[in-house]
Image (cartoon, rainbow, N blue to C red; front, side, top):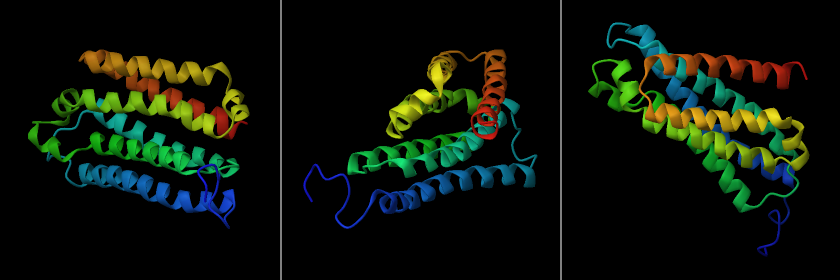
Length: 201
């Protein structure tokens, strides 16, 4: 196989996509399992540590984003030429989402009196990762084709840039009012985006 070969000898792009999808599915599955296990733990032992609605709302946002990501990645089946660089990029994107799930509920949460203090103390990591996820998403969407990228129109670009900017503000600002408004708006917009792009299309 030469460096310019798009696929492995004897394998077409569709076969390679199935191969790559298995790994992505494992990573995404681990992230979702982590979130679900912690959600179940909160319901099973509600008084163990005081919950914080903003933290729970962001955890729900991450859960929805990861589900959306897995649906979105079905479009990778249309990629005509797979190579190791594309495979590596998609895998790293999935790993970023796993880390986002891990920082939503970390084992270090036990070091804090409640989830409110945990959220604000670790917000730098959480929102830093979320900003990176939205930046990486530009490349992920472009990989699926220029036509696919431009098909979302200006709203897609504005959506990602606004999320990145607000995540940077969230890193610097501790204001509960800001974080409350941010997560409600982010959740509402995410649901709206999914419905408009995938249900009403």
